[in-house]
Length: 156
Image (cartoon, rainbow, N blue to C red; front, side, top):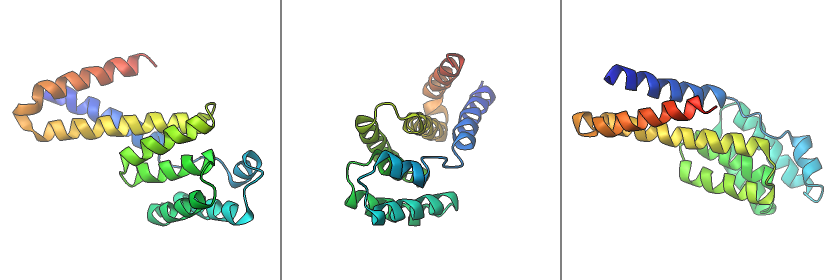
């Protein structure tokens, strides 16, 4: 049974990380179109953040998106990409909070919905890995979580 659980956790991790390895996100032009009031400096910070994210420099992207958000605190696109960057850095609680803020501002925001779901998967995988580290003491709970993964995947 342990092998089946490990396979399920690995499958969920692969789905999570492969599906989100590249930040498609909102392009700079789309962000500017979605937020016509955004200052050019904010658009530039966003653009630089997207480039840093695509290059895998998430620390740099984090700083750029934080600066952009300071300039435009109600910009759903910036919140979405800030949250994406936070997720990539393992800051799952912060990412969840910012995705939710982005969705409050723009409820019909497909990218934010996708990334929010991926963050929940990342969080669940992290919990499964922690349970696995408990050895026999976490085996029953790991089996239960694995079962939930399988049932959730079958609903898609």
